[in-house]
Each structure stands twice: as structure tokens, then as C-alpha cells.
Length: 134
Image (tube, rainbow, N blue to C red; front, side):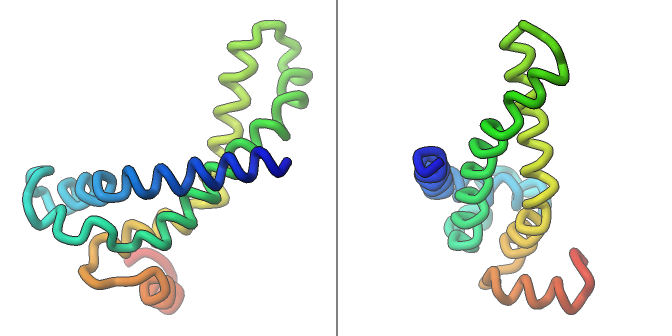
């Protein structure tokens, strides 16, 4: 529905703005084995932001859509009256579907973050020509 799509868009945009600097710094600290608060991890906190914004918006919107789509079929398949269990199973299936669909965007995001000055477009071209993640 339109409300779920708008909710997903708003949620994705908000989470991209709030969490991109932290997500990037955490990724760089693990990848380069630097302390989390090292200056180099925070030098370009919004590098790859447009790509992250698209990815998070799609992720949030699709998750809510998948939840609505899978709720009744999973409840019927499980035959359980335990709504907490049903909701947990729906969440797992919705998250797995999201991961399968958006894995390529996540790979691009991480490749963009590790290269200073890289853009989503340049990273996509490099990955396409190289056959994936180097």
C-alpha cells in the first residue's frame, strides 16, 4: 500500500542520514584494523550516501511490504495460534527475501566505502567489469 511505501521511504531516508557515518566508520575500522574513533574512519562520513540512501529506502520499503505479503501464508503454513512466533517467522522470511534481493547493493556499498573518492557509479562499473567483488 501507499502508506507502507511512504513509511519505508521515510524510514530508509532517516536511517541513512543518521547511521551512514557510524556504519562507514565501523566498516572501515574492521576492514583496516584501526580503532573505531580513528580520524581516518570519519574523514568522509557521507561518502556513498546517495547509494546508501537508495539501498536503505528499498530495504525498509520492501521489508514492510514483505511482512504484509508473507503474514497470512506463513500463519496458515505454520498452523500456530502463537502470534509472537508467527511474527518472528514472518520477520525472518521478510529479512531473508530482502537480503537475497539487495545483496548486490550491499556489496557495492562496502566497495564504495573502502576507496576514497569512489562513487556508486564508478564502483558498479568496476564490479561489472571485474566480475564482482575483488
